[in-house]
Amino acid sequence: MSRISSMIISQRAVTAMLNQQAKTSQTQLQISTGRRVLTPSDDPASSARLLDLNGALETVQQYQSNIERAKSRLETEEGVLDGMTNLLQRASELAIQGNNDTLSDNDTQAVAAEVRQILDQFYAMANTRDSNGEYIFAGYQSGDKPFTNPAIGSYSYQGDLGQRQLQISADRRVADSDSGYDLFVDVRTARVASVSAIAATDLTALADGEITIDGGNGGGPVALGSIAAAGSAGERAQQLMDAINSQHQRTGVRASINNSGTLQLTSVGGSGIDIALAAGAAARSGLTAGSVTATDTPRNVMETLYQLTTELENNRPVDRYIEDIRLALENLVTVHADVGGRLNSVNQQYEVNADLELSLESSKSTEEDLDYAEAIARFERQMTALQAAQQSYVKIKELSLFNYIR
Image (cartoon, rainbow, N blue to C red; front, side, top):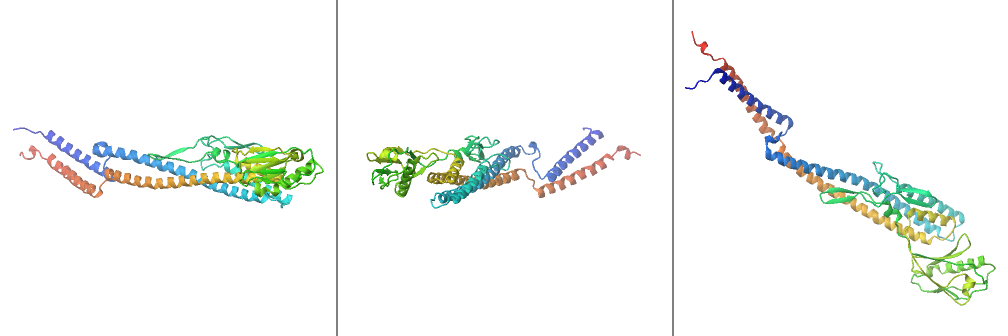
């Protein structure tokens, strides 16, 4: 027969009560936190899955944060481009309005003044910042002002060609801005051919057909009509300008006299200027027979607006700037459409990510969340068992042989 001492009985009872109390405490903690898995030892398999789910959730939430950042920047850029488009459209209207011989000098000066206001506003918008104070058209150099005006009529780009990319999903990145260089600096201009004359040395009359001009617009050569004798080289230049401009619609060539009194022929949008002269017509016109090929050189949009203003102020033709602004508008509209496409893309990806986030949260809830009904029922059972153990221990502890010895 084995003998169990009172001390062993007491130790076993206390250990059993402490174990039961620990279980009750664990259940109470689960109920208070709402979580079934509090430590990896509670459910190692679920704990491993929860680690993966938490990692995936944090990644998706970072994608959502990136999308909100990109959306804010793109919405700012879209608003700026919309405003710039309106400015260039107005500048185009003013250029066409100012390119009219019937306007008085005062009228032309008023048109030029409005174009100058457009230029100032355009320059300010090119240096727009986002809500974080970063310049949106500076490329990677978002902390530096992208455009400066170091000299009258000159606009310098201080940014770079970079385009910041933000990750919005596992396999998708989106640019949150555009380089000011591509938008406003490296902008295609009209194909232009220009020919300068010299002072005529023979001021006698020119017969019909002695000067033929082809502006490369597909209309073919056009002969100028007869030109009367002139009293001075300046008068001859004025005669030629009037004769050439009278055929402008057919040739695409326009003539003007610059500040130095030199006659200048310009064609816009054609392949070039071809001049044919009869014998002796060179001395009487100051023109040179031959061909000049049209070329185009990219130009800063703000410099185009400045040059347009200057030409209007000097009451000179602005055909080339009408075409330059049209091309600048095309470039702006193309980028504007691309920005809108990117905005639609990030909005759609946000919805996709939100669905994925909800699915991950649901899976995490399945693994981690507590079944309150089961937990409360378990807690009640554990409390009943603990109370019973405590009460039975009190009864057993009072048992002693000496209680029965008389």
